[in-house]
Length: 91
Image 1 (cartoon, rainbow, N blue to C red):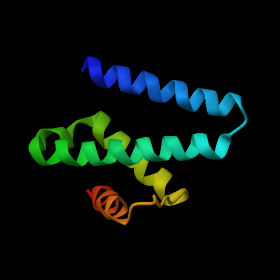
Image 2 (image 1 turned 60 degrees about the vertical axis):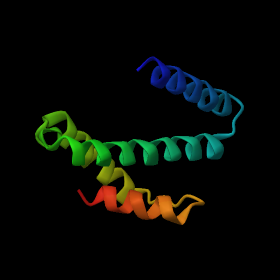
Image 3 (image 1 turned 90 degrees about the horizontal axis):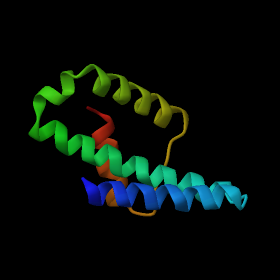
Image 4 (image 1 turned 90 degrees about the vertical axis):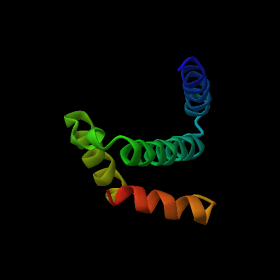
């Protein structure tokens, strides 16, 4: 958990610096990539912990992410990741 917190803090600093420098497109791309990773992790947890899918916060987050990605579709530079993210959004 400590390693994950360090990684999250480092990624947040990178995005904040890009935003403060006015590089919003790059900051958005960083956040979209983070969201892809979160979706893939959620899909993995869903397969190993079925009760997770019934958790109200998971249901709310899933709906929020689906709505966001419907409004703002995203493609990475890695088709294999895009395919996995698309499958993760189907849950």
